[in-house]
Image 1: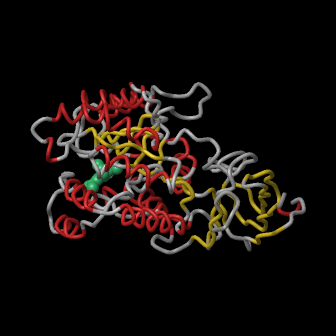
Image 2 (image 1 turned 30 degrees about the horizontal axis):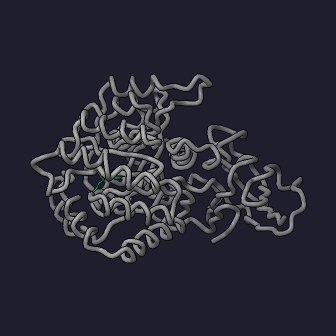
Image 3 (image 1 turned 90 degrees about the horizontal axis):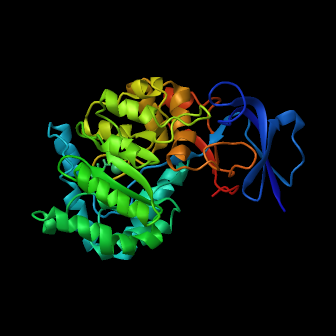
Length: 394
Ligand code: NIG
Ligand code: FE
């Protein structure tokens, strides 16, 4: 069994035992065996290992966990982005443009896009990335989207209820039946989660409840796009169905925040349902950012994710989202880094990632910086010096 010691770490973010909310250890080392962390402690007392990776006094943190991304698509919508920057509002209507391009694409074209974006994210420190379907919207196209997604991630999400496709525009009930019936059956072998875009212009709360309940009955975990473009009952529906995560949360009422806070875990470690905030979407649609402080102050567990998609947020960069969350959403750098690592893990109901403690997966990043603070302090700078995933440096 080969072991690897990452030592000479100036600042180690463990998200476990240590200083402050990030469980920081200084002058630390991490011992890795068979893809797992087996020991964390002072560099001076590190056990011997077969190989050594000298962090040179830099900061090391858990790899980012991007718990919300739409990578299976074709084409781009740069012109739509330019029109928005010239004053057009975002309505989600462009989703149908991407559906057309995705249906027309070959498997290999879709696969190449997923791999390109997954690789791009990995180089920016993302060691786990959730991938949704949702631009196929036929039984065959949703199944192949998930099949291709599953080649790059175990965290795959069936989003057949992204919008009602044009051919069902005047009979949405029939589309919901399709999603709950043959489409779900074709998706389930490749999916771990079910998601619905619950919003005016997409699916109302009754349709969303029906689809999520079918997915749940088929063994999938629940997540939901809710309260992105306006207020609504989506967040409360997520809580009702024990969703792992309610995503976007841009327009929240007091009742929504109370409902999320009401999912508090008995051990005091935050909430069962996580609020996943996607500041790349507000950036790229020039919309007001969600109120992260209000959620954090109410005790709600917050995650940050990219929402990487060709319409509302074409970024794969978790460091960019961390910087946005700090500058625009009044999260502290520590809150933002926690939300982008351990928070994302919680949004996927995982406890083996997002932390660097014995037993966790050896997924980590070495920064080209002495502290995690630099992720927000030096926005737009490529600070990821090295990435390790499952104990391997790709
Ligand atoms: O999460 N809101 C719904 N879905 C995506 C946007 C998809 C698109 O515009 O293509 C989102 O922002
Ligand atoms: Fe999304």
